[in-house]
Length: 394
Image (cartoon, rainbow, N blue to C red; front, side):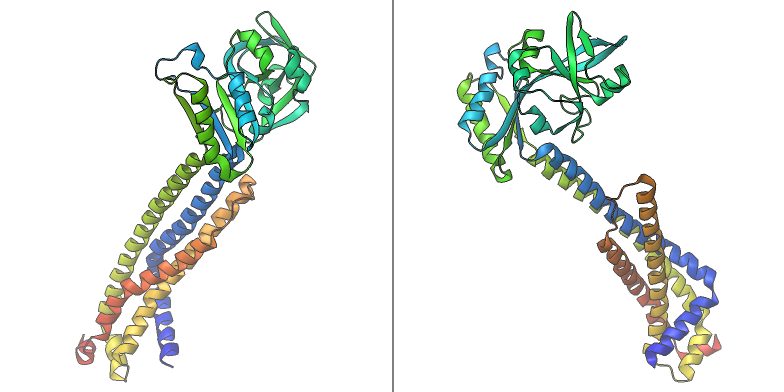
């Protein structure tokens, strides 16, 4: 009976001044919504970034010549280096090399600045290229030096406006036939050799075109993800053994980038959660302030209840329940608002990967209710300590 009576009295007290109760709930509503949104955004954002990095390939190792110091032509990466990696390391499932240069090409009356990239076999596999039309280079294309190329879908759209397969582009006096149109399977947003406007040539053709006989980057794919670390160190060892002792090579994989992205995402989520908790703390201070005012305004009511037999514990419980109802009600409203925002965003952006973090929902409800208990206890305790005789004379 004590709990039922206390709940009924607490509900009546809040219903008697709905505006004050609603305004007191507002801070808790904002803080609770912020917790749900921050946790959801943090999880979704982390998942998205990780999927991009993993899509590029956490099993990929790439090597480049460090040009920060003095280098010689003998230091450059070569086809022989690529072949040595393929033959000496049995756990390499694919390996490729690239040579890229900026250039201007003429196509369909347009002169466009592009990136021309010479590639060796396995480039499509390692970079996960998707052919939208036509075909990729075959073994004969790589060996014969025929004037063939494939172009990015953006270059195809801007220069040809339709399907460019079978058409040709011209680079100065050099002309080549387009045999395919491609796009990146996982976008790198221009952070790799593939840019928006890109033309791919077989390496042998590219080598004769630019008059250079080296590779800018060598990529190697491990046959298993647990071999990436060993592959990284072994490639560095092979390159050091085949070149001058003074030459320096950067041999890296995306595992470190994955860890860094994970740390950044976690740090950002913690920072935003701290701001949400600060909002809830401010809201809790508001609850305590309002409850102290309520105690001062309702001393006569407290005196009457004590005069007819209410114990200090009953008074304390009633006022504590009022604070909990305010915080819990605000938390529920905040969660509803956050869920509505998440689902509306998912529908508007057609992004099915946006999922609600039910852990965030539970945290918001628990933390907000805890805020009500912590900040509502003192006013409730003050009310329970009032002298009934003095309260009745107030």
